[in-house]
Image 1 (cartoon, helix red, strand yellow):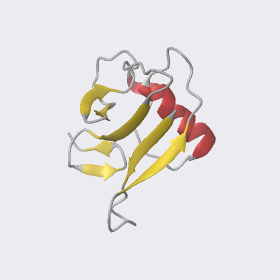
Image 2: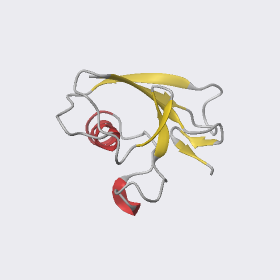
Image 3: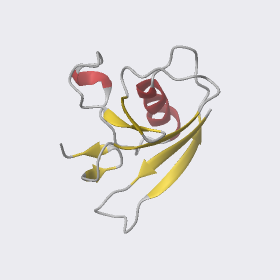
Image 4: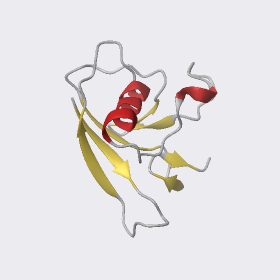
Length: 101
C-alpha cells in the first residue's frame, strides 16, 4: 500500500511536504499500525502520537486526517489495497502529525 505522509518541522522546514512510503499492510491493521511500521522500519524521524497513552479510541490524542476525513489512528482499520494520505487534524502543527489541541 502507498502512504503519503504530511511532514513539517517548524524548527528546520520552511514549507510542509509529503513523503511517500510503500508499506506491506496486513489485514486488520489500523492507521496506527501503518505509522508504527513506517517509524520502526522506514523512517524513524516521523512524529505522531503513539499507542502508549490509550490505544482504545478513548483519549483522542491520535486524531488525524486520513484522505481528508478526521479519524483516530488507533481504531481506524485500513484495507490492504488502499492508498492513504495522512495529514494533521488541524493547522496548529507542532511537528508532522503532532498538533496543539
